Image 1 (cartoon, rainbow, N blue to C red):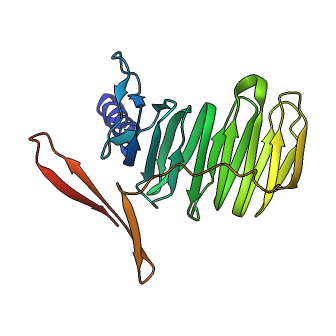
Image 2: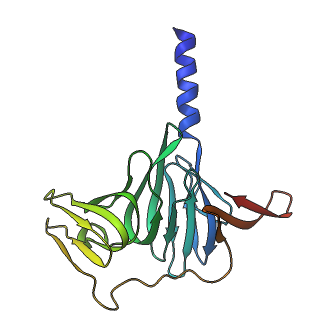
Image 3: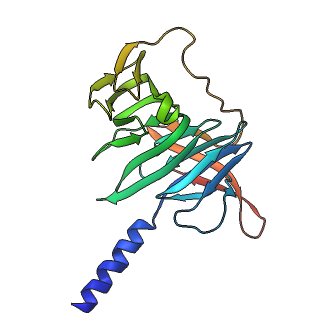
Amino acid sequence: MYKLLILLFTFSFAVENKNIALVTKTRGNVQFKKNQSIDGDKKLKMGTKLFSNDLIKTGTDGLAIFVYLDDKSQIKVQNNSEMYVRGNMDKGQIQKEISMNNGLFKASINSQKSGVFTIVTPTSVASVKGTEFWVVSKGEEGGDQFFGLSGLVEVRNKKSNRITRVTKSKTAISRPDGTLELRTTRPGELPVDEQSEGGGTGSGNGGSKEIRIKFEDSSGNQKDLIIK
């Protein structure tokens, strides 16, 4: 019995500490903090491995892009944002979650074979199977906006439990008072994608996906890292 408990604890620890995502681009002031770390914030760099419950914070000029390792779903974190990157392994798939206090990000989520991709804010919970969309969260007092670019996003307001579905060219506005509005996205309303040229790039070939980034190892050598 004692040996069995040790084995179960070891397995659980290994899963919780598994690398779930990789940073493919950073720009400007971007800080991160490792889960349960007693150290202060550190500068986030391209090539950094992300684990569940890592915290990412971008400054006024900050930008960070990371991809989940199981299906290459991509998150572009824009300036003045703060979020926790979360994920649990289940049958070889990462059950993904972004928990954010405030900020702005663009998500390109590939079809989830099992479960859903979840976004949690102080006001809302959004569930995604596979789609592309923007999220703007203004904290506990400001509420959220969800801009659909493709696919489907299901948004639930925490206070009222009202639910709406956001599709292409639709905007959901979820407010702290419990109201949830769905309307057509207005001209000029979409956030601006602040990704600049250079850094990580992606290309497809025959349906496959490849991300190639340059990074510096512990010895200072420049290397190419390819994710397929």
